[in-house]
Image (cartoon, rainbow, N blue to C red; front, side, top):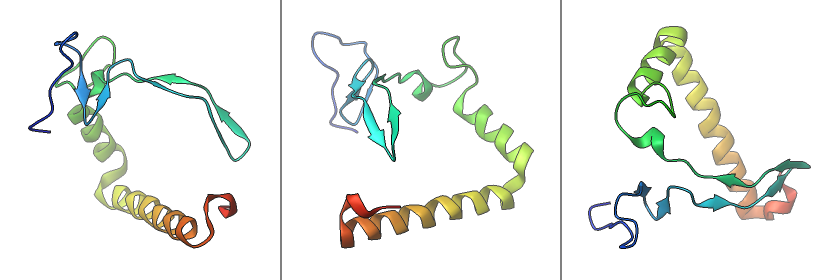
Length: 100
């Protein structure tokens, strides 16, 4: 964001929208599946290929396009959007405890 600034004690840290390199997400249980605590890594947002994250975002997208084609990718995006709409609607109507 244009007005976002890095922390004064770590001016070279990667950050985006209030999320900083190394922030930790706590362990969470989703549908009886335990997702472990995770340290956030933001190297992927950097331009170009890196040793840590591998191919750049553009290279990854081009590979997906080459492998699946535009129509199959559009179909996958449609499925994800519909699932998101349904989950959001169910959460608003019934609360998160009734999601299937």
